[in-house]
Image 1: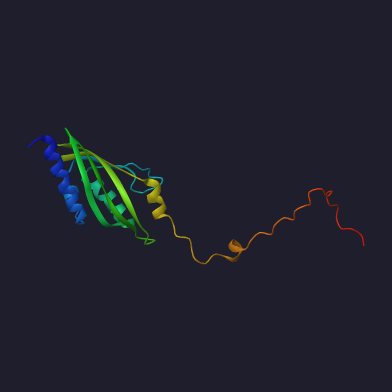
Image 2: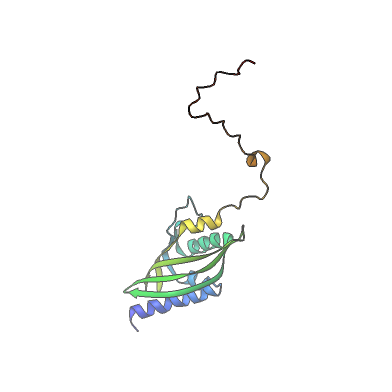
Length: 168
């Protein structure tokens, strides 16, 4: 079996387990000092940025699982060249706070060495995920927020500017 075939098989096993809600296969596949990251800033997502080692992978997946739930996850395609793998994955995800559901596509770029992940970066539509996770507007708004502002009176086209009240 070639390096590419071994790497594809390793990543498929990880994704198949993750689809069964078993992240332990992923955690066990992280090399000592390996990096796991998400192509999103921590300013927008608490799981954004790079995380180190198995412990970092467990922490970041924990952050994601606290906010989001995969209703359906699938691995669509895995492509390998040498020690690099690109995987197209995704599915249907639910925001735990709002209950809203969306389809989310992911692209993982992974580097493996001796069957272990040394670098894993996941790319996704961060704008769509931010929209999904945005606070839900309340159904009842304060009266002042719903009250329309009075419209300004329009002046007739050829009328001179008003100078106050006219005398009777």
